[in-house]
Image (cartoon, rainbow, N blue to C red; front, side, top):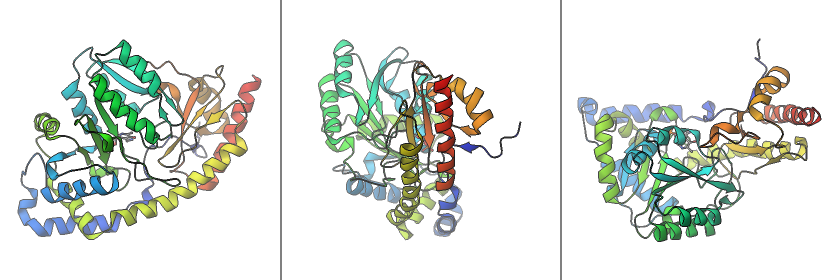
Length: 376
Ligand code: PMP
């Protein structure tokens, strides 16, 4: 069967026409011109200090993290490697950790490799349920690590409130665990006011702040960066050396040149201008098309909204039996985003990879699908 006209809400990728291709090409040329043949040599596990200094500056000005120097910044092979290295550093088989329910599927893939014992804490419209977290910590004081996507959650679309960020750090201090704050979407805010990072509240070096260039520049750079205490970073460097020796110098130098000669904030403002149009189209379509039996989160940024449907509906079955063959739409069913794969009546919808017309059309089809499913 040919579903060429299918509208796919499945993407997790940034929109290609918005890539800063010309400026990045120039940045690569500038990087090569600066160091000549030495560009292509082995360098160091840490990568260029100029780039880490720029990122330390950004961490302080944009993320409101205090006292960050280049020594507190580590470059990783995408945010994904940051997650993997933190898991490798902290988790032995059976160790207890907390994930949000739902959570980023790629983080689960990374954590799964170290076979932790997962404790799920529900995600609410203002971020993870900290009361439920506290109950879990009381019952399981052995918990070592908590992973959270506080800004424009993947897949949930929600953002953690300021009060919860503060309380989360207090709980980490009280119950002695590490927080991995994963923020690839943080700069992509379309409405509302930016909040300080969780790490802003960190007084004991317990929060690892992780960011990435994949969503604000290009995924192929495979470059993420994290901010942490030097103790944690030293341990992570040993693991990175064991995994892949070092940051690719050409890429890191090109990013450094890009940041030196272009305004990242201006580029992000352009992304936000375009993505805002799509976010608005999605929010309007949710209100217009979804039946009363369904609820959707209203993201202020990022890539996704999360739809919860009637409990009787299994969204995996619905996708393969009805959504794709009959309505020609696709989404990611909820099951994938839970540590125990036991949540079957939700779906993740991407809105940044589609035009407003496609969003309106696709959401109309989704509305029809859910109304038909309710009648079955
Ligand atoms: N964390 C989250 C929440 C993500 O959505 C993604 C990408 N989809 C990543 C980390 C990893 O991205 P990358 O390795 O490209 O930085």
